Length: 290
Length: 341
Image 1 (cartoon, one colour):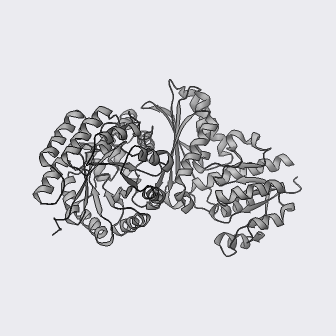
Image 2 (tube, one colour):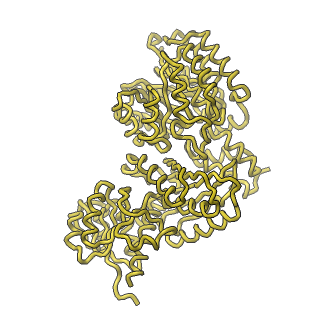
């Protein structure tokens, strides 16, 4: 029997923060003790208040004031803000999960490197496309060590791409490419992002393509299927659309990501997957502390 | 009647849109030979590079034989009065890697494009080009998919970011002249910057649509030599040159040299000139990006399905340019259903 859930805080009360709140409230190992932002009348704040969660409009100050009661914080603000927050969290001894592209801490993809991240003060969740594609890239590279080049293409619904995503497309591409390289050990990588305005909204789709001489399709298939199962433990809506195939000199595999529909619509699998990854990390951390 | 004394800016997209027709295998010798012909013909801009623009060489849309910067430097050496332009799609190309690289190659005009409803993703790219003291236009691709009022709002955003022109692309070759008149007419009326049109010939209407655009007030017109471009090709520049001349629009074009440029392109790219066929017609009908023709044919062959069914299904799903990976998913799904002969 658990005596006490891990006390966590969420900083940033936009769509990502609010969706995280719903996920934390459902968790058997996490408890949200503070939902902090800047505006008490924002939709996220209102929702949190209605759900009986303690809220603060003092942002980072709110976290500092309650530091002794908080073990872990999800930072869903912006990259520039997280750069400042990170040092404060570390000093306070609060574990930080960074959902911005600030890249302060080690990049974490739970299906690939969860264990090695559990001792670090700060982990970064990369990008939505990174969470969806890196595990597949790792599976492909594991089955085909001779891989020369890896590319990922994600298509998301226009409505799931907020102003921050739109203005930061370049950062998204470069961060995703860097994540692919670091995790797969394949130096040459490329990321592409498409926004599709179709109604009803398209669900997130991510394809990984690779250049491999004499690809081992059956080994790739085995590794990819195993990886997909591992991801489904924490992203239930992650599903294989195209099993690994060789076509036109490329190795291709494709997944779709349906969101859980907690705060964000189900089509926004891109926002859901990065939140699911953050929760998976937090729960693993909580379980280890027990 | 349009004001025919107004100078028309003619953009030659042969070495960019033609990249689709040539599976992105255009060589530096071909760049040299054609750039000289384009310069002689008096076209205002020559667009060069991968069919999907800077940084688009990829497994998804096809790998370029020659890197962007080599193509651009080579073209630049052959041009003096004709200015060098590139196509840029945020989501493929980044500012620091691709745009700054192209600036270093001497590119004078950046045509920053996006799917026709997503103009805000072009803000930083357009601003960056303008801040560098160079020319930037906005390009709304697949513009048959949005209503005139939506296109106007998106074009206004581009204008506010600093775009000095806006081009509507009929990327799927799906427009009818009446659509061109409505959309170009509204933009021309409500924007402060010149408006342009980029046609594809999937339904055999590229010249008719280009003329409708000019008559509705467009001051920028795109074409390619002998229509060398994606799908059934673009508005053939040599025919545009003839029509513009006969209608007494003011341009820099030398008719005979424009006709020669067409012949030169036909020789340089012999065997790959676009033609109307059942796939390009269906692509236009379904309103799917013309550049999908080759990958659809490949996937349909591999999975044993009818490429025309693939196109209609892609049209139903309202795919946008850049979603080439969905071709395989759709072809595989159709193959599984087995409802195909």
